[in-house]
Image (cartoon, rainbow, N blue to C red; front, side, top):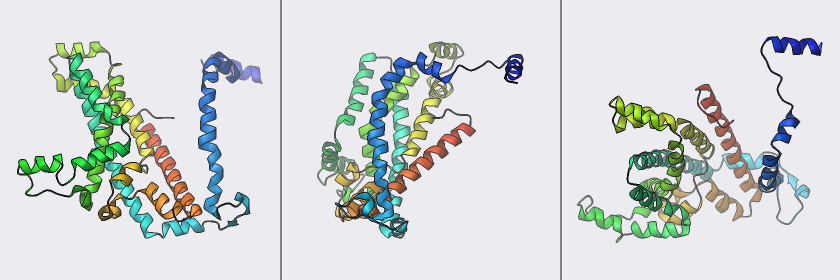
Length: 318
C-alpha cells in the first residue's frame, strides 16, 4: 500500500520531503549556535511562568508556593473591578498608539530622506546624530526633557519669542499635554535607531529599478511611491505586527520619571500600576494577575495581527 502511495505521489509530481533528522544534521552548526539562546529563553522566559500560580492564590511572602490558599479567579475579578486599572488601560493604549503612529511615520520618513541624500558625509553625520539619543538611559533623557520643557526652558523661550504663546507654560503639569510629550520624546530618542532597519531594507532594492524609472521620467517622489515603499513593505508589515504585539508596553521609566502629581491620572501605565498598587502594597497575587492579563492580551493581539497580514497576502512572522 505504501509503495502505491509513493508511486501516486511521483506521478503527481510531488517529491518526497527530506526527513527531519537529515535536515537537522545538515544544519548542525546552526543548531549548536542556537543552543545558548534557547537556554537563555528557557531560563528567563519559561521558568518564571511557574510564578503565575500566585495569581490564583492568596500569596504570602516567604511561604512555599504550593502552601498558599487557592482563590481561583478572585484576583482577576478584583483587577477588572478596580477603577484605577481601567484608567491605566486607557493611558497605556493612548500612549502606545501615539508612539506607534509617530514612531512609524517619523522613522520611515527619516529613512526615506536619508536614502535620497547623495553626500555620504552629510548622510553619516545626520544618521549618527539621530540615533545617539537611543544610547541614553531614560534617567538622563528625562532630565534633558524636563530642562527643555521647564518654565525658563528652550521650548518656552522659543515659543514666546515667536509670539506663539503669551506666557510660559508648565508643560509637564498639564494633563492634556502629557501623552503628546511622551510621544514626541519617544520619537526624539528612537527615530534614528528605528530608521536603521528601513535603511538596511532599502539597500536590497535593485538599483536598476531606479534607473528605469529615471529613463521613464519619474521624479524622486514617484520613485519613493512606486519603488522604495513597495520594496520595504514586507519589513514595515513585520515590524508593525511586532509592535502591535507590544501595544500594552507603553513604557515604565519614561512615564515614571516624567510624571508629576498633577498628571498622575494620565501618566500611569500598566507597569506603574503593578508596581504602585501591587508590589509596593505587598499584593503579589494582584500584581501577578495584572501581569498575566497584559501578557495574554499581547499574545492575542500578535496572533490577530499576524493572521490579518496573512489574509491580506502580506509578509508575516509565522
